[in-house]
Image 1 (cartoon, helix red, strand yellow):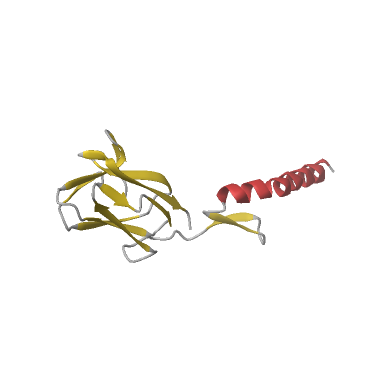
Image 2 (cartoon, rainbow, N blue to C red):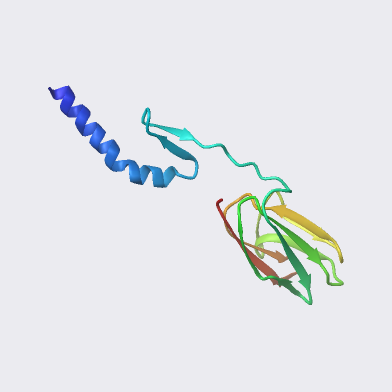
Length: 142
């Protein structure tokens, strides 16, 4: 009898916690109702050709658009239309971070570089030589 009570209490605890558990892990797992286990979802591999392409232009000492809302696996191509060479870095000025394997890249006039949005969150990129030349992007999960 005690085993049945413990089993029923255990089942009630699991059932009561399912909404919280599936919310927390819903991006990577799903609940398999047949055998009450969590099953990992396949991970999406981002490539240079997957997702939406966004264009970002540096012109007249500013970056347009100044804000991009995107999803994971989208990509941003930054083109320098100004006459000066730009040193594009991620993160706040003097606190650079790496994004998509890039910490900083040199961008001469009329040249472009593309980065894939693999990491979710809010980020900024800027010209290390002129930190007023900056833009933000937010990456949401798919």
